[in-house]
Length: 233
Image 1 (cartoon, rainbow, N blue to C red):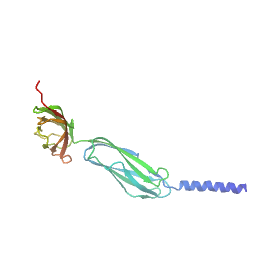
Image 2 (cartoon, helix red, strand yellow):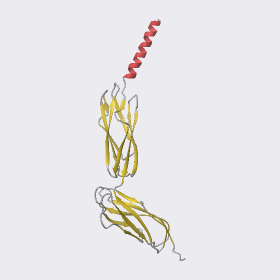
Image 3 (cartoon, rainbow, N blue to C red):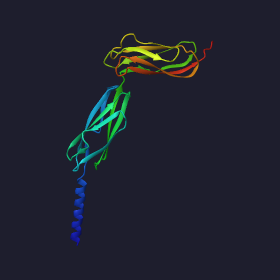
Image 4 (cartoon, rainbow, N blue to C red):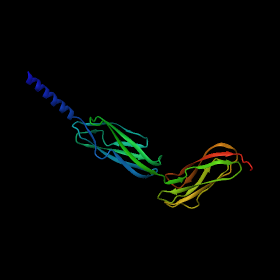
């Protein structure tokens, strides 16, 4: 009787071991995080991530979720036999970003070891056209009196940059733009003269620069500040 119980117990342990082993398992062959490095704004970068089924049953990929609409994902296959691999192509569109970026992609599967794998990536997006500062600030401007502001434009692109024009609906504003193209890596100044026509407690306007850059044909520049009545001293 005792030997039968021992045999039954050993059989149960063996069966449990077999069932526990005979399962799909996922492995990211490289690191779960990577860096796209520096990207010019508007660039679409892509990375292929290799994953492997290290289990003994078919690995089924379910949802692949990106943390942002800027990120695309495309698996080479969703059913991965034991011992075989697949590739997930991860793409990042940098069009709407500036500076450091951190995003994630979550892979859901039937893997018993890690059914929810998070892949992370970073990038640093550089504007091809960099404005410093990125706005005009007219604090305590006075009706009928000229106020001036300036900003610097840097061409981070690979081609000469031409500022082709500007437009703004704010009355009393004039802009002086560079007459010559800005060479790659070089800077130029843009100056604004504002002669307010009326009082405005909160100035919240904007203007557009048009450029020769195909990826940034227009640049929006916010205009902030306030306008008060001119008082003789």
